[in-house]
Image 1 (tube, each protein chain N blue to C red):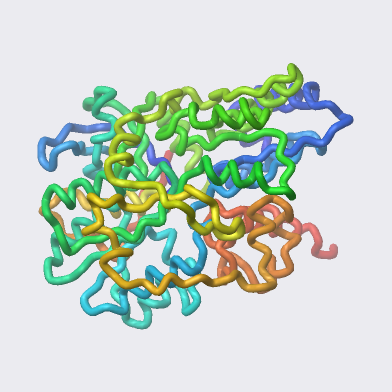
Image 2 (cartoon, rainbow over the protein chains, first blue to last red):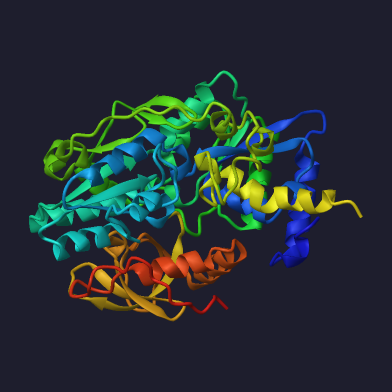
Length: 373
Length: 107
């Protein structure tokens, strides 16, 4: 039990770990998917796998927005800075994500005007400060960041700021979970539900997973004890033959979510009929676009974008890893051609991508161990 | 982008509307509070911030836990870079491209 000493409540951690062992049926294999990339990072960082019996497998889900964005969308976004006087703005997380002809950072090195912003509100600020230029904001994220983009657009419209547009790549978590459950090569017994997405959408949208799919889902916090307690809650449901939505992260997540956030999203966005997810293909009604009221601020209408589709490098197995069919280290490129320093696939770019997390905490450890004495 | 950064409301600002001065480990920035206003929010309250917008009101204990989590995950610097990157108000110059100041780490 590697990291137990540095946990805040080592006793409670040990007790919970013991309880998991008591509850788990040694005769069966369990596959629980943690949907959120933040959980993936925490699970690797704290070595939580070591605190679970070997028949409980944690499968890493699609909840890393940078990782699921297809390369074609990055190319489309970058095509916009080819225009005169255009400023491309995006969160720092996007800067190293590879496009066909390099990442946004590499485009910047070649002279494109590419700026990091930390908030969509600051992208709008850039537009106010540069009235002679057009500022495009590359919007990305699940429901956690979508309300911020929506509010920024509401302000842009109210102030009549016309030199600002949003390239909307916001995705929604529920259709991705549905796609996973519909996928023939996926066998997931239960879900550890996302924490921060749920502060916005609440717990109700997960009810169909329990009711119609018969799978327990527990919305979880990010502390080691939170994740372990969520596993206990799942196992207890399974032991009683139940499937319910439970909220382990009640201290932050209200059951009904954040109504104000849902309201601004409804005001600005419409559901796309389908959207491509890296490694998962096209998923219907899984992403947001600006509605007609906001079409003047929609970068996809302002610019003529090529609508590029790029398949992942053949050797990279991002899709299989993303769906939990392969472990990161089972990909042929892992640790060789594809590393956090030189990522080939998007799962290696973000610290919440399962490959980067695995590389940082597991791969290095195994490299150290394998050095002959 | 996916970081949830805990901060304490220092004062409510009338201008720009729906914003507050928020302190995160000694760094003060203006943050949009529109989405937590319906819950009732005032100086001394703690919030979780995503990309410059307060998304939920939390207890002080949970804020401290979240700071510790960010430290444990090695994301303190990224979080502080994000907070410093928020420009403070509308009269400010637009955000710097490469905010570099070395920050204090979380306690």
